Image (tube, rainbow, N blue to C red; front, side, top):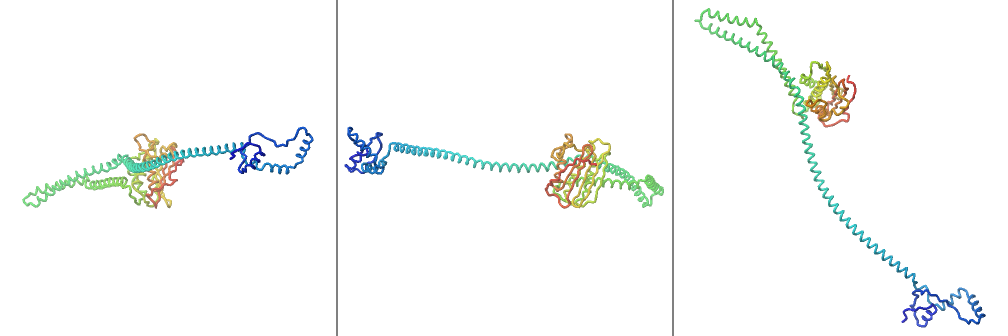
Length: 448
């Protein structure tokens, strides 16, 4: 059996014919070339020329026909060396690409798995952090609620403390207001006590006289002496005018006691601790009651000008409104005192415009500096010396008027000229926590 043969195409064709080989194919080229030719004798040049002309006269078609008779297998059916090398190189590249792809794919899988594992860990940490965060938020919320509750309680205590502080400033004046009528009431009672002693002496003489008259054994001289003593005691009372004076003393004492009763009633109404009480009141009455309590603050050099108009009743918390009025009046008196003016003036006006009741408290005191601005309503802000103010007065006034009564509070001030606070309260609504954007305004204008 023939496995391979190295020969020229013509020889291979002859071998295929002789041995009947049908599967013999060109496997490659040796790199050596053998041209086919006719042999002729060298000494026959004429024959050479004839043969050359004959060969040259053969057409391409005849040349192909003769070639096909001698060479009966296709030279292109085999694979050349370059083709084999190309195939091997291509196959190697494909294998290399496949291996590279598999390697890169494995690296990517490892990286994806690693990143997935890291993401899972991150998700677990995030989940735990979310749980911890929710717990912290809940705890913080509870802490804030507790702090807010404490703050509200502290605020309520500070409001009450400020109120008590304002009352404390009036204690000396109230004590004086009570001591004055109490003093002359005490003097009148002492006089009445002496009068009662003399009347009691006269009553004893009359009782003795009655006993003598009923006793028939009594002498006429004894009766006469007792009668003279009674007549002398009555004449002494009439001459000294003690009877008429006692009537006047009784009237004066009752007037003094009424004054004391009025002061205590005003103080009771002002300092009422029922913060939730809403009632219909006339602000004119509240102003007059507050002025009486603040009488000790109104020095001799401060004139009070009241211009109270016709205003309707409004629904409000009377105790808190009294606190606002007392604070504004107190501030006005302090401002006048600090200005050093020989004559101060405090003007209080009320008016009604059909929907709101307006209260104006104006003084000709020292005024408010421009640097203070709206900070005057901030808690704990004060321009007074240490120990003379808590810095809560105007802040509490703002909360009471604006937040609790849906009212408005405005300020007009000029340094060295004076200050005017204007309060506006609705007649139909009270006690609702609302704030108007225009509730706080400060106009640097002359107070006039």
